[in-house]
Image 1 (cartoon, rainbow, N blue to C red):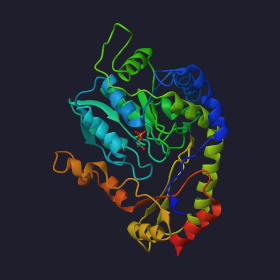
Image 2: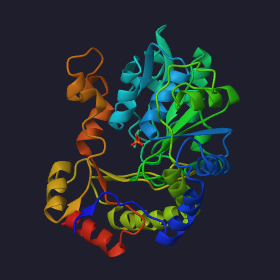
Image 3: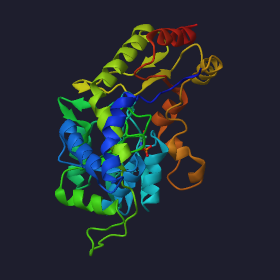
Image 4: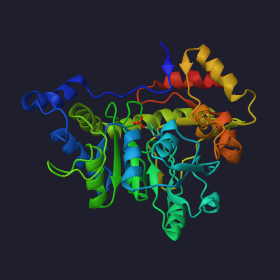
Length: 364
Ligand SMILES: *Cc1c(COP(=O)(O)O)cnc(C)c1O
């Protein structure tokens, strides 16, 4: 059987059945039922944030939060991310302006941020990558100086805390993805965490066709509500999250033990004061005896499927070819990394012997 880059964790079957039992009594399957409300409450408590709004998926959460902030203009972001981040900006009628990344954290380089701010800039949308946090202090300080909102794509960072503060609490809003491949999932799902009650209400209306109540429809909203079955999966998975992260930590430590100190291999450095969620295990091949693509081919031939996360960069996508501002040469650090990085298989139940085997194949 192939070893994929990730494998969804599942709660015990009986636990999920128990969780959804009352849906057979109530016949209330979606539209902000009890599971939905309970998950919002539990997420707020776990993340320590003021407001949490659940969505069908992370991507729609991102499109809705861009709309909720009323953004029209240029949004500064990074190309070293999943398609969703850039597409959400473009689909919302805004223009992404690409900032290069820091070569150690793989996140937006705040040293290059201020030069990109113009009178057309309306927001900053940085991405926490692999479970590493952006330099939230410097980004926040620059944004405040220019009066710009900061919306984080926090899809990789559920369960990441810095000095006890979760990634939901940085910036004006944070988007999480609860897709099946993420550290915490609701099968498909997502959330926006924000501060104000007003923003909470607007997001709630937007995800339900813009309907506020029976007689008032203040927005041209779409449909992006999380259903009760997904919320129930979230309630189950949240109970096991501590165990999930601890198991991932053990896999990561095993990789580190095997690959540390090998010339030409750059491993992900843990950040000071940051409690990671061990979402991904990136290795950068720089001056190693084989290229990233050679290692990829070699592992694939053995049924091990790593991923070239993130290759290609979003500013190199076919759909944007020839458009102004979409040029990976303008973000050379990200472009170089995209050619060298490989994320190795990492999930809670990945056997440590398999980790050893993967490392042997790389080292051979
Ligand atoms: C997964 C992911 C998304 C999209 O989330 P979905 O829930 O799959 O829609 C957005 N941004 C990043 C960085 C992601 O990894």
